[in-house]
Image (tube, rainbow, N blue to C red; front, side, top):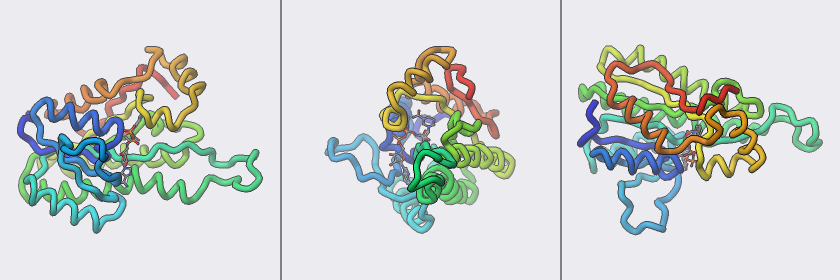
Length: 246
Ligand SMILES: NC(=O)c1ccc[n+]([C@@H]2O[C@H](COP(=O)([O-])OP(=O)(O)OC[C@H]3O[C@@H](n4cnc5c(N)ncnc54)[C@H](O)[C@@H]3O)[C@@H](O)[C@H]2O)c1
């Protein structure tokens, strides 16, 4: 698909990877709309892309924000499900006498932001693509953690679910000309990675990564661009991880 002039929705588009993708997509001619649970950052009085504030885990809010977005900007041809919440916690923490079990609140929050958000937004956007006969594309953000990263029960389960949805949708939606592709980054140099991991953990990851560094948001964009431009790509996960195996 040629992204030039197409409307692209980037969920989580105020985050590290999402904001970089939104700018890079606009640079190659796409029209970009951002959905995020955060308010528009006050730093920029004239944001480059329209931002719609929504909790994507709430289906009614998703339906209503999408109506507003389509009324303002027209029909989306590409959906990038980049919203997510990275969380690390062991299943059982025997050294913590007060909270031994993985927090149930954290489990719910991680499933909601990564998996339910992707499901809700995709179901409403794809409904429009099917009824309006738009040969569209859904790009889902998974993670290397879907391979079973120890210490990330909720996040790994959510991202494995995202990869499963990607395959299901490729089969269900292929006959309508709609493609579905997942991107599974390894560890990317973002503020979210710095927030989730200690300096020592990041140094250890670099040592274990064959390319001996974190990835960049530009390298993630290049995979997104490939997914957009290659019309025979569907039902698969593109891993961008510097060769790291968990
Ligand atoms: N940074 C990495 O190294 C890395 C690695 C692998 C996968 N990923 C995935 O890439 C995606 C982007 O990661 P990032 O590093 O930019 O994270 P980030 O935390 O910087 O951005 C995530 C964005 O999603 C938004 N969001 C979360 N829950 C939401 C909800 N319920 N409704 C609406 N918006 C919501 C947040 O407000 C935030 O702006 C995520 O799906 C993440 O799991 C990131």
